Image 1 (spheres, rainbow, N blue to C red):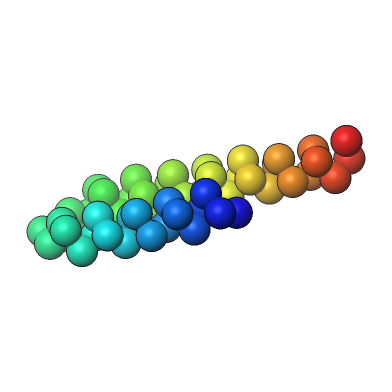
Image 2 (cartoon, helix red, strand yellow):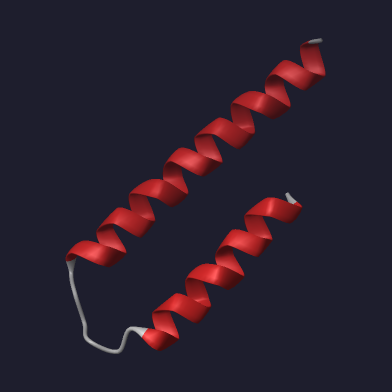
Length: 50
């Protein structure tokens, strides 16, 4: 979970730097975020069972 918060902080900094609104970038970031959550939850499930 530390990595996740670090990634989020990094994304926030990047968002501040890029001032031009680009609809594709938030979409990709959202997609990546969902994938990260999915992987993290799968890892947690594996850790619980193993």
